Length: 321
Image (cartoon, rainbow, N blue to C red; front, side, top):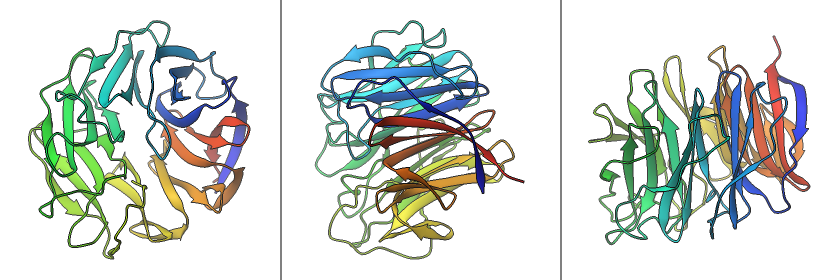
């Protein structure tokens, strides 16, 4: 069970969508877009308060159904990525969000990221890996790229996974995490034998090669895309995943009914799970009120952000004994 510490409704412009959180210690970074401008807001007190949002860039950014920006933070380095005109672009700040770089394009084939779905993570040495759904060749595939200079430049793109049946699931976002050993983990929804199940691909060579394994024992035969990619984080024992199968949420065992799951690993090493059920945000089984598209991040504590009817809400959380 969780207890609430503080609630902050940020001074966002109307229409802000698809919030994404990242945390490192007491620094929490929030990224979002209204479809016209890419924004970042930064907290230095663990999510109790945030500075005014900064407009990083203006363009026709993809938002909706997890097609919003992604964000990572380590120390004073913050990197925000978003997709516009089929291009996955990353902006970075080296001073905690006060000044931002020009955008660096990640996908090296023009418009190959036009589906608009991606994930990003930062590792123990500041390495950053981005993964996205890619259409550079016939059939939807998962591609990735690595940055070792804080997001200023990106490696040649590498294939993460190609389904032997021709496509991965076309509209479910990938998730990325990097563990303490530098192994890169990418979770995505596959399309194999008519089933739309979540797979976890892992690389031990900085994203050059990956091996993939299905998550969970059940399967979901579906002739459609659920537009729901799940959540991924690294715990003390390794990667932790949460996903939707049909109308239920799983992380190994069944957690409840709903969709759009998210998770973070709290400072004690325990997972905090959230999702949407019947138009309400659910955190560890408790309703937080109306909303959807939950994001969770853990630094000194756990912070949640979601789309609510009156804007993007951000809440800091504490687990009860």
